[in-house]
Length: 173
Image 1 (cartoon, rainbow, N blue to C red):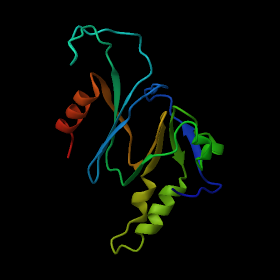
Image 2 (cartoon, rainbow, N blue to C red; image 1 turned 180 degrees about the horizontal axis):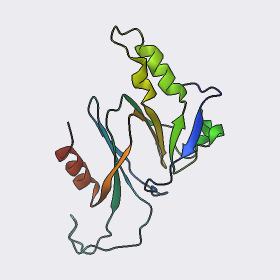
Image 3 (cartoon, one colour; image 1 turned 30 degrees about the vertical axis):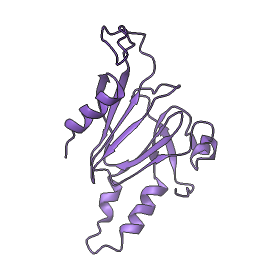
């Protein structure tokens, strides 16, 4: 993790799809430079699909997934804290809350990454000024990413296995 200082400022991003407060089951698929995040979104109204599940039952509920793309990501973390321990996150006092999406302005993490990379002979400090620190807080996990941008890739409908397959098959390498 990283330590914060007086410069870190958390801004909530309400334009991103709200995750389900129950079990959003986030998925992270990443290459060296790009990353896709998918999660079950907040109830959009119950919809039923006329399809058959593996047990032969019909009319199973449709699951809506938000897919978010982080092009040119340089680092990410995925894991703890969960919603019950989020108060222990270093940015809790700055506004990080459960089940939300946030951007951290003047991020200590980005500054730490820039200092770490400064020993590289081709280091360019200006590249780090173009990066943003994003936080997605879920029920069981928290996802953080440093990337140039964070784009809503779309809303997909289907079971988890299909969403993973769709992301992998359409991944922009």
